[in-house]
Image (tube, rainbow, N blue to C red; front, top):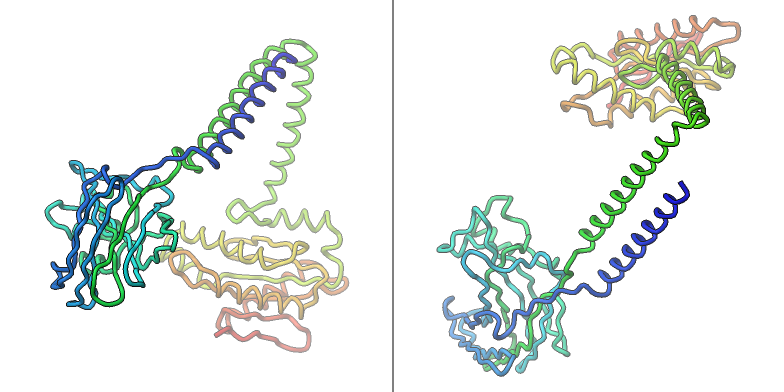
Length: 439
């Protein structure tokens, strides 16, 4: 056993060092960069002439730089030029979803302001047709200001599906979300302000940055490694202990442990006899045991609240017993969450429930019942049902039998039902009290 523990220390220590090293490396390194600029993909410039404008754009290469010239003519309201990159190879483009951000390094010469946007076109399997440009999903980031240093960082989660494209293409809902996993075209769209004349945008580089392994994936792998290590350790430990159990002293210890476990199980089974299996609250046997074991429950003042779910039979008849059982469970949960820890909730039978409230007079019991009645109104029930209940409240008086208090509460419950249901009636000697139904 000592040797086994020694090996375990080495294994877990090594795994801990590996976990720390990988997390640090993922945070400070593990960088993946994809260059999209000159020399890597076909590039062209388009302008607004296809839309009725008169602007003219062209591109030239200067080393690794792409220089877009745009001779602006304000024939239309929104004159523009755009620098377009073509990533399409066969039916596939670039998976940009694995990257975290895009960096644009560029300089601009011309009148200010100069706004630009990044527009990408995506191929959606089962939706995009290569001969119909409207079927390419369009995602974009608009109205970006180029910083004075020309270094623009664009997080990939800034991209949204273009609203104008959704209104025009009317795609199915499953094709209306951003995923960026098959981008075939990228446009740097320049929307220049000011008057007519030539503007020059020089793109020094356009790069995608991400991690070789995402943080979530790395954490998933590490958790898997730790779980596998723990399971392996437990398996080895189990085999070792199984061998030691051949020793008589170990066998006696094992029998002692089994006996303790059986005692706990016997106690659990005894406790289950007092619990209603459907709702998880006390049954009548459980109430009897609680009254016998907890003398404070009968100390005056003590209130009893009888509850009956209104029209429960029609719920079973209309929606079936499965829905009826679900209503009973949720009903018990709502009532249990609205009472004190010292109160006892009992399923009396069928759809009838009983609450025993120690240190509570009939007036306080009536207030509690009203609160519970309102709580039922604000709960969401299965099958869109509206579930209400009627309440009867009575108080235990000195020398009264518990059965007398329950009988008084039961009579008040039936008085509430005869008065229209969804209300509270309380047994107050010398007067009749009925709580009004909530609107």
